Amino acid sequence: MLTSHLKRRAVLAGVAALLARPPASLAATSALVTPGQTEGPFYPVAFPADMDADLVRIKGQAALAMGQITHVSGRVLDHRGEIVPGAMVEIWQCDANGIYNHPRAPGHARHDRGFQGYGRTQVDAAGRYAFRTIRPVAYPGRAPHIHFKVHAPGLGRLTTQLYVAGEPQNATDGVLNAIRDRAARESVIVRLEDASDIEPGALKGTFDVILSI
Ligand SMILES: [Fe+2]
Image (cartoon, rainbow, N blue to C red):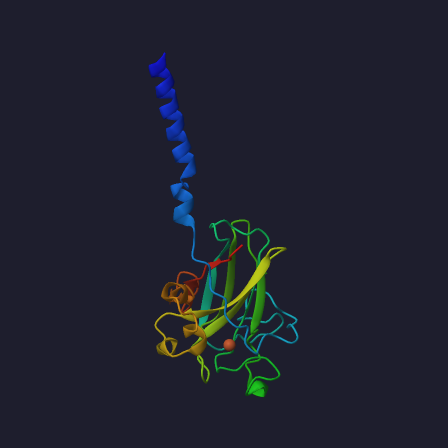
């Protein structure tokens, strides 16, 4: 009787110890929160008539954007690695000549009329977003980058920037290097690879955005 009572207590203690420990799966998926970055001076003052997820082609226009077509996609996740239903992702960037479609941008009059410059999309049921845009290029003082603003409805938003792996300017870009933690800094640097499987001559990269919510 006493033995079975002790055995039962031992089993219960074991169960309690297991419950007190965070599940390995959760701990393993706990992700590094994407660092915030400045919005910069060129967020649109007026949204374009076409602001879909394809920045390469403007609806109703024959001309495509100049530059190398690049497919950027990923997921929006919370800090536990769970998807964020209804999240909305905005991106904006300069054209292939380094000029933003923004009235205060240097050289604005010469911006590429075939490049949408700004786009937005909502994540799908699996938490994924996808943009068709151009490979970002450098402009004076900045490494190539794409601006991101990610909205989690009712929960908050994150403004950040995506950089391209292997770009020499990454070493000296003041905005990028203001992220002092190396792992956090590397989390916004994306490797672009051949995307001929999607369309000839294109590139693709994956950028998951991890929110602190
Ligand atoms: Fe910028």
